[in-house]
Length: 373
Image (cartoon, rainbow, N blue to C red; front, side, top):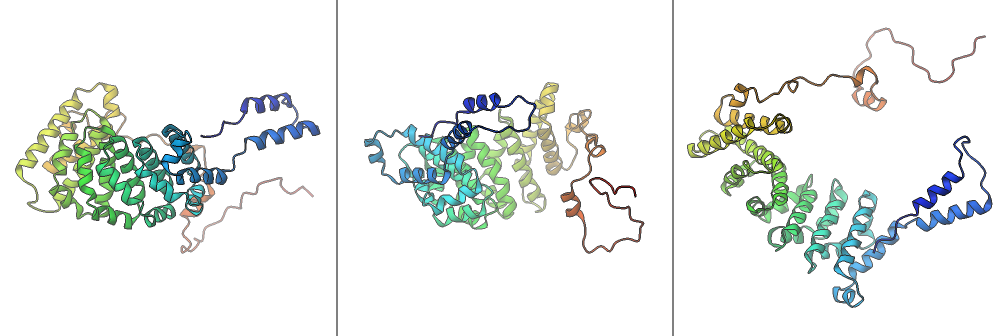
């Protein structure tokens, strides 16, 4: 349902035909000017008006749309267009004022899984790094259908998209985090980790460290729910991102345990040591190219080994922790050619510091100097 794109080819040909590359500007005939303005206006989209039109469609009952020949694919395309519009924070915030946020949230309950998934994507775009829209979605009870889809939707893609939207909604949003915890969100995360879908696993693993950072006491909660056992299994995943994220979560939990004496069993320690030994063996068998790509994994394995076993990992002994050139910072080339920006200088200036009694250099003046008298 999105409108056709601009006729860029026609405008480009027109522009080239009216410029020979030598003059910075030239006078246009009235006919050319009229053609150009009509061409540009024809391609100008009133975003607010389009969002109002999309809102009207979202408010229309599903059976009415079907009777008018509107297919689920048409609605997906419409949501694609809406997502492009709300990538602008201003447009995202305006969606509620024109009445479009509540119908969008209602689409999370649509009978078509693809539409539920796409609606969650749009919600995620609206609330990402946007406290105002986060608050509006919370006030519109948008978290409730997202949680429902995340935990019980029969379609794993819809569940994954709902989790992505939840992650965007509750980050830097304390009421959102509290609501997620009260809704037994950790149980949903455990199910996501236990699924066979890699993307679903990644979404869960990326959210868990944030939640534990916000509430360190939750380390005990996830341990009671059996997260460490599942994460040990995922630390051997064929997917590199899943492996790294699982190791990162295990490291967070291990550091929390290290601050609490007698909080771990020897059986757990033995199992973790076995997992780490398997990872070290896998790392040692990697090609040079794969070793370079697994830099973070190597460092995570070493840190986890050191935290849990209180000794250097075999990666250090084998010379696999830091490859040649990795342990040295990259050469500073940019500072030799560029001065720091004025904004950076101003940010670093301490207004409370009294100026030192040093000889000041005369200010650098831009523009022509004074003429000699």
